[in-house]
Length: 178
Image (cartoon, rainbow, N blue to C red; front, side, top):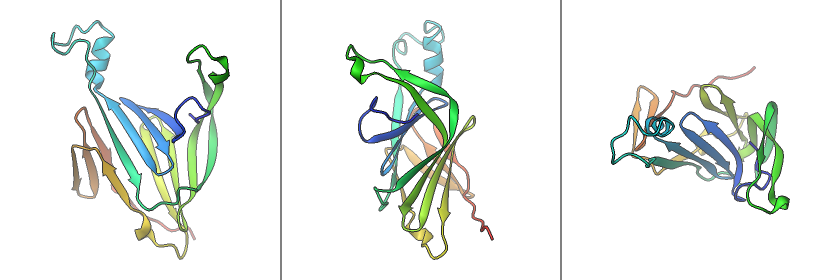
């Protein structure tokens, strides 16, 4: 969902993901997850929770930083969704936003010199690609994970451990279009 002023200035887009949301910003992505089991139990009055767990929802946010990126990259929005969202917060109608579009694909042209970043929303989560043009240096792509419990790399797969869940980033691969 594109930010039309319904969130802070640093947020460009927001996407709902299973167990949370992600916020795309100029120099990274903030992921905010909640404990899905507790969340679902809250909808049933907390029947499956202990007395100590009732009324609580544990969350964990972490940030993926694009280290050394160009913060003035160009954003290309494609595959506009058929749905939209409305935001009516507070009593000031001038701050309300309606028919805010959703996009399935975002491309950040020039996020690094000669390199573009593409974020793709799908029913299975978010996927991303880096497009490296001829002559560009792929080693300029540097990602920093901030606020995670543990990072573990096994057989090329990155396991990101949080206090409420885990995130898996599949092994990257490269190919060339000729």
